[in-house]
Length: 322
Image (cartoon, rainbow, N blue to C red):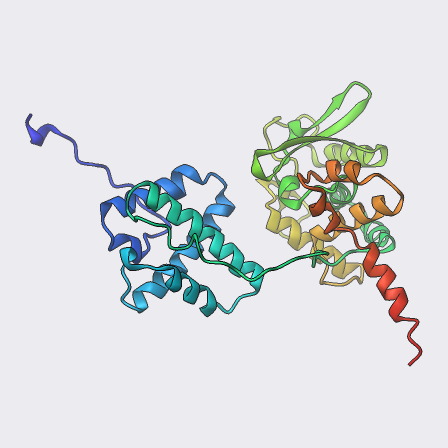
């Protein structure tokens, strides 16, 4: 066979940059790296987080003149101990290394997974860290929005969806015009959430009215069904563009509205999710129903959002006589 007629392998540009530890290990290591990050991991956020871990580990190994095939469980442990991060973050780094090394073992780059036997400190969370916004402050925030133009309407509806559906801000940012639709006598929102989950949540009457008013004032009533439901604004013109709002755009908008309403800047879009879950549990709604609304696979995750115990504790400490 004439090798001159065989096309050379097309080298695709790697925007993330190949870590030196993998590059120095040869072609098999590079293949396993590309297969793992661009073939097996489909979630872009997981890919970004795992790439960060591998880069950190690569730099740590290179600074110690440590080749990939010489990495031992002790090296993985020392690397984790060297990280100036909280325990939950250290556990995430360990999980990333375990999965990545599994891929290298499967492709016979390594004989054994050096991260498999490494253990992390025990860490148990009984309550999440996200600050909760109170029901009264959520009402105050909604009332502070004037609704005088399309951007006001947009912000009011985004915050309303965060409150009345307990959806994550990332899922709200992904909404398209077709994701707000009528099913019989009920309007629904279709959310595309992390893990490839698609959930349909009914829209309560006042939120439905607000959404319809937003569609009319923004001119999106008959927009392309695939177009974004929530769009960025042109500076201070109060006019919307054709570009979708990102989750970061929505987070900045919420912070801006919180400041304007005189509320704590520690609050975030996730604070509404905490408030909604806690409020429903306080009203006696069964945990499994709240879990379904929140889209949690495990009820223990839903309990992390429950702030009722914190309120009880606050009442107790206020009674100390000193």
